[in-house]
Length: 201
Image (cartoon, rainbow, N blue to C red; front, side, top):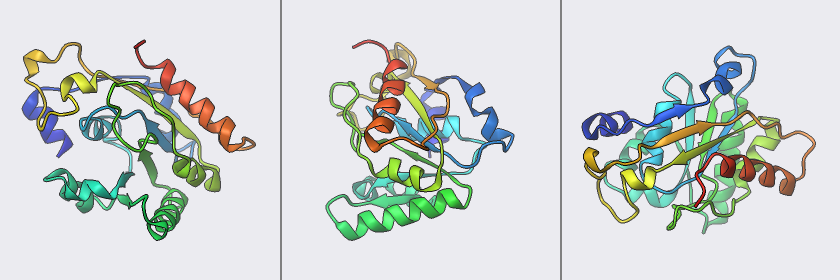
């Protein structure tokens, strides 16, 4: 779905920092948790641009199952769904996430939990970080810029290619170790890494 959307609408993002994935590509680093800011539906297909050659699953909120095409695509892909209003769903998603990382599969999530209405980076929820800590998995920060220009928050479909200025950019940061850090220290470090890769608002 993601690749088809980017091809049809001519909205391929620019990807920077691929060298920070070399350790994973060469098998020197076990599975990792990738986290990114979230300002547009296009963030989801954009991650496929980064992970085309990596085995990964996304952690997505259960509400996405109701979104036409997108919900079906995510479900067929075997990704992890989370309903934050239900404790049982939270525990199940946590166990699935921990096992997924343990099996050597990378995880991708948007820790803000929802799309930003003003493109500013919001606060992070802790669940995904707990999964990474349980496995000693590194966290790789990703900063996605201008996705909200490609598909604004209230648009059902991406804007026309001619209106996409500037082009979306994905900056991949260096892996951040999780060992020996408190929850607060880890979240702050990852938040700062993503914020540093975004344009000033």
